[in-house]
View 1: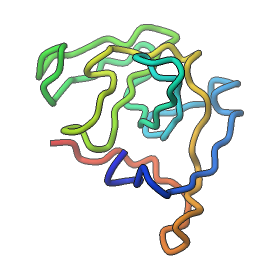
View 2: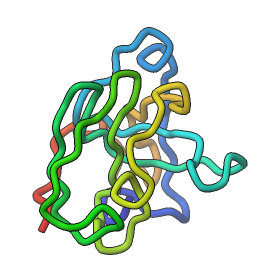
View 3: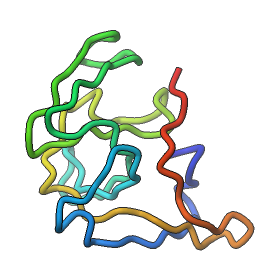
Length: 124
């Protein structure tokens, strides 16, 4: 999730109610069980919900410029650094059941502490 978060040292607070009660929204930063390795947890941003059409801009296995319909019960996840992120562009929509929680507050480092924005970055 660079540049939004540093993978070494940033500490985030996570809440689980949004995932338990289907309150995840587009732009939310979530933690999810990895589609490639179920023992790993990934941090990504929600760019699409069930029923949404998502346009893939960066090259991927799906092909750049392609539009994908996110199935019901799934989400489309992407990292904030699309050039260096393995995400839904590579493995497709993610079952919502794999979501673990929504990150809402960055508490470390202290000089960067604050609520996490749900604003979607301008992807190239």
